[in-house]
Image (cartoon, rainbow, N blue to C red; front, top):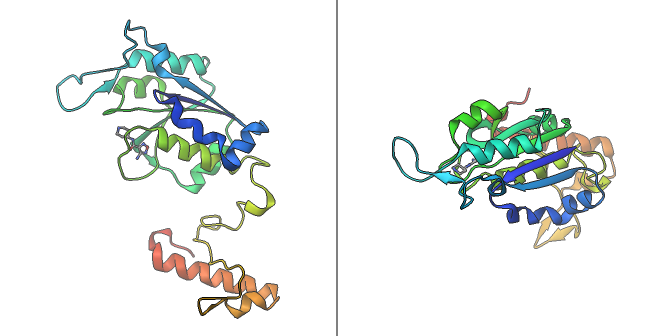
Length: 223
Ligand code: 4GS
């Protein structure tokens, strides 16, 4: 899988060199190419923003550098082009899985008050939000997309970090986990987890998972 990123803050993506994602990129299990939108500006000062028509606060990203950078990374429009914005459909684990099945995605990042609407009309396939709050630019949202999608690329996660028994994998929140010591600050690990009875452990975990989902996320509706 290839992920292309269009941004005016390419340095924000240095976090991709860390941890599990950094290792996966080193192994070329997938690729991320980052492009500075400013490099595509035909303005003599490399300007990428301007005042909004109609007035109002802030600046708007101009269409020319966006259109040219999008066209440069995806000339035949074979990729799914995604604009990160609070107006988009909110990212969830089902969407993450779907995105992970694509060959090429382009992540388009706005800053300031946003981008000229005509770019959304002309060049964008989908708008995607990571949640109901406002960031200073789409870049942290893009990093969330890259991180969550990468987890579904074969061999990115080791056997210790599988996507099979985690929150949302069954549409529910994950059961509580315990490790050594058996007692900590007077608190014991639930007996069933020490029993060696795998059927009973699975039953307990399932029940815990349903209980915590009902309590904390009634919106997730299970069964
Ligand atoms: C989000 C979000 C976001 C909106 C970008 C204001 C700068 C900012 N992008 N999910 N202009 N939430 N974007 O807040 O994706």
